[in-house]
Image (tube, rainbow, N blue to C red; front, side, top):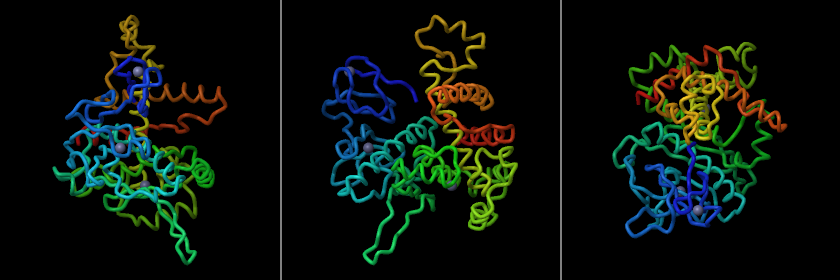
Length: 359
Ligand SMILES: [Zn+2]
Ligand SMILES: [Zn+2]
Ligand SMILES: [Zn+2]
């Protein structure tokens, strides 16, 4: 994530800010221009997202090339690029549900920030009606007869469903511990699930399929059986050699999605590090000397979202994660990045890098 300034007083503001903490100016983020703007805007300017007052969405509506333009029939009001892709939301009469929805949308806007930076397609058709990336943010329900209707987080034919209870910290931590996962976050869910959408768009039925199978394995093996076996028997003891997470070893689709999510973690993390001048590897490089006098630290490095060399990204990412883990331990927190990237995993990251760059 890059850094932002208040357009009125130039104080640093953050991606999620609706107001400047210093001068109080209203703020709105214009996603396609990657710009923080001060509100109110003049006539003819982009309008704030209709969800601004409802869930604190600070995005503005800009006309897009992904189709859909502004507004989607939400009572005539316009939704921003991110909110527009949410097809189902929980019952907002329930305050807790509304808060959970807000937390999910906050994480989802970070996902869309990355999708835009990578220039990934958000729909198949120019008007955005076909093959669009769609989200359903739903909670478990108790039916009138007392039966529980469970919502499964997952991807099905272009539609991503997230169980909104994951936005509850206690619930998510309980799930994390029960599944023995070292890391479980909302942004992680979005980055993982969107990978399944892009597998359908960029791999299925294309000439990339063979290379994908060579990298991640043959996805034609029975999905339900593979997952059932994973949950019944656990992963193979040597999984860390080849997979970025235990879950990635469950099926080639999950390996692809986990690796894709890690590529987003890496590039997003590196952009943030670069914006704040944090990059342990760069300090040992000769070019660092040239930048010492610069006001913008590390400005000489390429933006990670547009990097041409995946190995260079990994070479910068690993020392950064080691430093960040040490920082977290010094505060008694869990590791920032509780994963180990092996050569086999780096090869898979390179596949994702080339796929995104070539799409
Ligand atoms: Zn300000
Ligand atoms: Zn919005
Ligand atoms: Zn998955």
